[in-house]
Amino acid sequence: MLSLGALAGLSLGNLSCTRRAREEFLQKHFREMTEADKAAVIGRLEAQYQQQYGKAVRVGTEPAVPGTLWGYGLDLSRCIGCRRCVYACVQENNQSRGNPQLQWIRVIRLKKGSLINLENSEHYYDPATVPEPGFMYMPVQCQQCENPPCVRVCPVKATWKEPDGLVVVDYNWCIGCRYCIAACPYKGRVFNWAEPTLPPQEINPEVHYLGNRPRMKNVVEKCTFCVQRVRKGRYPACVEACPTGTRKFGNLLDPASEIRYLIEHKRVFRMKEDLNTEPKFYYFFSA
Image (cartoon, rainbow, N blue to C red; front, side, top):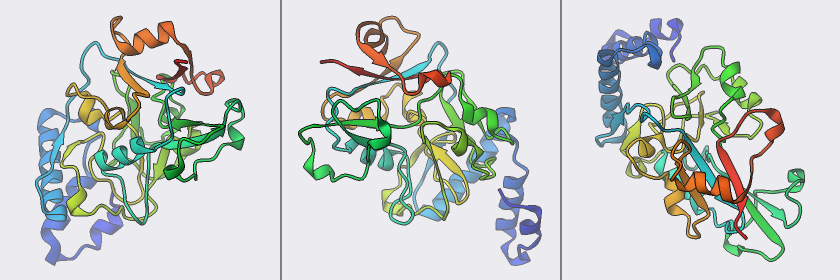
């Protein structure tokens, strides 16, 4: 978000830019917007993206579906470390390519039998060699905590938990202080140190205001379980991309959902449960 000093420094020759910057600076918090406010903001963003990327980008504001609490399951017995989930996530969520390169999913390689010793893990391995004998793979991303420490520390309330359990960020309110990054015990957030690199031909034009819309320099971003997809009845991109059926997703409030079945019938665990963050991301072994 621009400072008043930056606004004052804009030239008269950039009147439309000045007006847009002023509107952005005075924008209300997303949760305080009326439908008319949202329509005005979405119109401004879509015009901005059209000019920036040369194609029509639809910015959605779909709310949480009543009666849903999204949960994720990951079968460590099946993951082969191919990182296709990472690549699908980058493409779907308009993450920065090249310099800087940002990824919301980290795939950790561990020696079998060393799951409790994550300090000796690594995520800089050659995906062309997987699966490797004697190793297992553990993808890690935002755990969508029910008690998220990142939300508590944000001084401007730019991040919060939605009714369907998704922890989201309003990039227009984020001031880049990175308190949330320090508070997250899962390294689930990344920071844009420079202007993101997103080639126009690679942009995904179907975005959500609280999810995969193009970001800007000096803001924090994170996985949202593909809010732009799940609120339309679709699976997250990483679930669809997984070639081994490792990833499971569903409504924790639905007794007939696959995620509820695996929680009730598999050997499940959550990362760092002792911290009382109550992640909605469950790891399990099917074999």
